[in-house]
Image 1: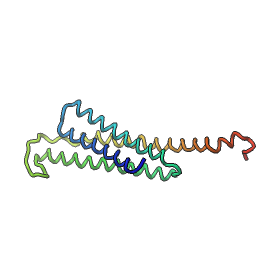
Image 2: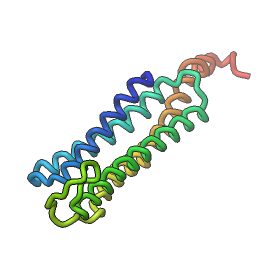
Image 3: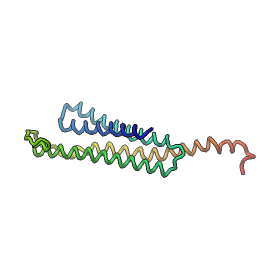
Image 4: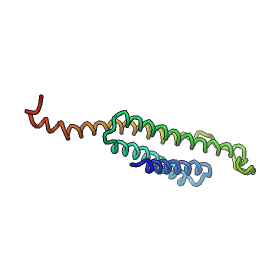
Length: 165
């Protein structure tokens, strides 16, 4: 998987997150809101898994340290995704609380400002996916590499007892 593909995957996850935050503000029907939240959870979890598993498969000749550093890089980008979504959510909160558009300076009746507690869903989706799949991919990728090494080279030597030291 190339860097460009990873960027598109991250952009898709961020776009769905932005759409979900805006749906929270616009408050469409409950089914639409729940559907968008479910979509965000699936896209975020899928993006994290796809990028981590893709790198684990593409890491031909890479050391354990390199894969671990890449997993840390993915973690940083997931947190950046959360921070940017949180920034958008805070801006929406400020708009709802003041009723003034910061960009155009107009006043609108928005209604009461919703609490920022609804952002916990986004945190749980991102962090739970990251904390669940990152160690899993790191553990399974090396177990698979070890088994591949055994199957390729050492297993053949074990089949021939005279080749053993």
